[in-house]
Length: 635
Image (tube, rainbow, N blue to C red):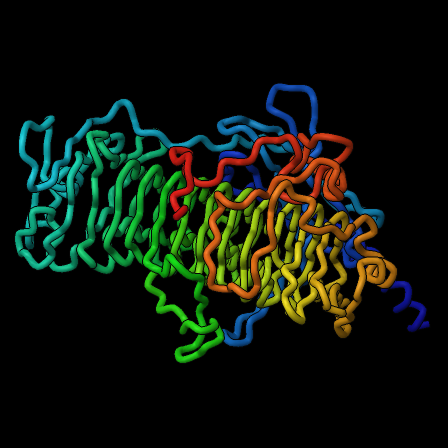
């Protein structure tokens, strides 16, 4: 009798576990073109629940489909060296792509589960995308000149930025700050050299001893504080070799525009982990040169940065590709490892950042999310809803873009990367995802592969990329989905073209194109969860054994109009994007060979989407600053 009662009591429990109970629905920080969402759940132990997404502009009738939310949860992210472990909460997360700025959208999410849904199964919300911050038209205009300026001045005028920003004060008196700039003020920096004389007690630029300028005022969304070039010539902030030029981590709603920053380790420091960070920092149309770091925040509360149309030039070797390794190691080839003279151009943490249309060269890494560790409980203090797109990256000593440390809705798309010593695009790790790698270009990664998936990342979506490299990451990763990509081998000795290393049963891969390496038997490497790695010589063998890549194809470099394979015997050689043509040739095997993905390839030409980053008969994206119409890296 007791056994019968126990059996009867377990039946509802099992049903409750397989059914889905929706929890907190979170709208992430909007960006200019994309919206992100995550929806916590309980149950669904058999992972057969789905969330369908559709959207429309507010006050219109026609709905449009979007990508479904990605089912996440239960994946274990770990890295032994730092004793870091994290189990992804059960949820759905995902993005709606390619929206118009400053526009309200009605978004509908429908949760379905064959085993039942307990609670509210549908969410309908209206969310407005962001607009670019602009200088206020109602505040004062303050004019700043260098200390050696001669000739007339526009009034009110000041010598150096800090005098306009805080009021006059030198030496000990710099802390007085009696005449602060106000929300809505625009500070125009007139042409000249602004170079602190830090060992001068009465430094004319009010930066004694450190040569660093700390800014801490607060603008508002409608009335930002703007610091911009006056337009009468180049306005140069020169750090004179100091460590930190500007500390802006206490600021809110600041715009830096049309300025040059140079000769410093850190140009704009915007946040320290567990201390403080900036809010709504805009850095636009600026030039950074001879720097170690461009823009940097590690603070979880830093939010809504816009870093766009800038040129970042680091201090690393410009004539050869040299990787990083241990001291005295020759793993980088005939050259020793580089000395980290420039770390990265941009690194951020927190929600809602946009890093777009920048040109970056001669850094260890180009653009990064902070490898912050496991995310905090507050969803507004995580690396989420971050857009990294249309950046032009040339010569990195490690990787092009690192999404490492991201939580949800990291969107890395339409970037061009040429010359990275180790890997192209990284998720090391990802705490649930999705991280989207969409329509990125990659060429010449001599020591590594296209994607770096270390530290057991979870929630990876890889769509429509053109990778002139193998995918060789063999460490386990979870919940990965590949569609419409091109992976072209470089005849690298003893390396297969593709490796899938699944840690959990949630994965998919189809409609991709591969160019196998010559004289390699283990071409396609497959690890099912809990199993040993298996290798296959042909794509057909992989299809039959795994059921994946049913529509995958093998192809070669003749799919392009004119693109040659990088020379594996010249690992230190520097290629230039102006010499590379990634456009597909009509009637090649990559044409019309892809799968339709709503909001990702809606505007495809022909019978179906093409494979790779560039659709036939569509204009190529503009990579890098929109004020630059040539390659700033070409020699």
